[in-house]
Image 1 (cartoon, rainbow, N blue to C red):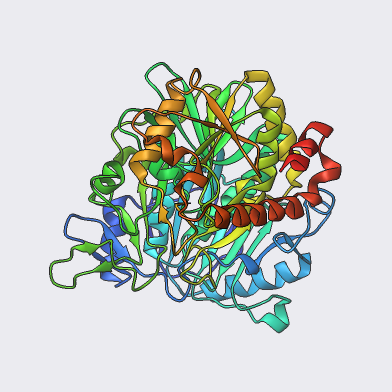
Image 2 (tube, one colour):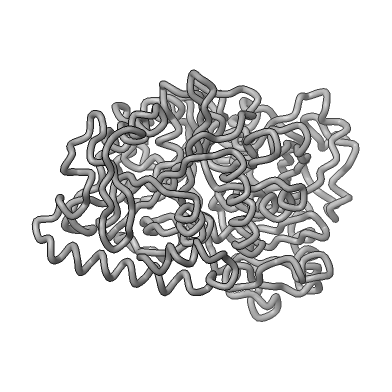
Length: 534
């Protein structure tokens, strides 16, 4: 074992088909990983201790290169689609075999960690990668094991990660030389051809979205916070809509920033860290995230850094708009240490509306909540996926996380509906996108106003104010909100040309109707009536 460093598990790498390796680095602590990142020239130290790395060609996810092995375990459960592409088991075995051959003679970095903060659902996992910085990423975002647990760690899901290994599309039956493949029977994922670390995180999120509903737990693409009175709030939304930013609130404790489960006794974080967008990061508006990027051990992806001063320029998007920082949740001051909280009192559906026609905040009844949950409307923001340009694109991503939902959306919607009714949870639609016009004419909703509206909703200050029902979407909008100009609350009032607003709103309403047709036969009459009124 002279070629081993760290605390190896008795459940060795030969169980994953890996043999004849060079150095095996087992669950190295942060300082040891940072040393190797620097010595191997995988990244550079920023002036206050963060590590700055480059992900290569891929600076966002590769959604067209994600597959699920279709076998007896998954064939009848997975909602097969362009998002959940089936792959034959023999293709998986061939690719796995070539990956194990690729690793022979190379160094490997193993992180034995866990996912799911709730003890009842906690799952031991293992991330095996060829890069020290990806191992530090996994260490930052998942839940760490105690050192004494490591020798007996037996993973229940394993990720084999080789960014520099590429598939042969014609041979492997894939779309390109990049691949993210999940095999639920073998509890394993293969990732190759891309250095974007978010693929590791989202592969495990996809796995939990498959496994947890079988235990009557609703997996959710959301952040979660707890107020002083113990009130829990959830923030659903796709990348760039503000989940991490709005949940990083000095007045509330964060449960987690991105992935949660809702079980019989409340919500719990899947992860032990955060993965925040940091493009144009502001110390004034996002002080908690700003502080976290100054910690030793934080991994910063694709941000510009001065080669002499080693100061990071978060305003520089020359590499990508999708600059990221991965750090343990413990780097934040106000957190729920055990990652577990009660049932939510308020839920916020966040959307970055590029059309600029949705209100900054609207109150939803439970039928509307399921409608908007299934619709998952937002705008894809630049850089979060390969192929996106600099302008946002309107999209519908069901459950506010379609790329990560292997089951049919109706399954998740049914679970949400049952929990909303049982716990009398209030749901809000919040537009963090554009106001005063569409993208290119209007402006992005000011973050202080969004914070003020969300805070007012959580504090019950929107319960007794008058509401106005706006046309096209029949959404109930408060006429007053503390610390927010009244004219901002009704989107039509912010446009210089009201007729242009009407045309744009009608167009978006048509897009909603067209998109929702796929769900009509899976929902009850009340939810379909929501569609008919839009």
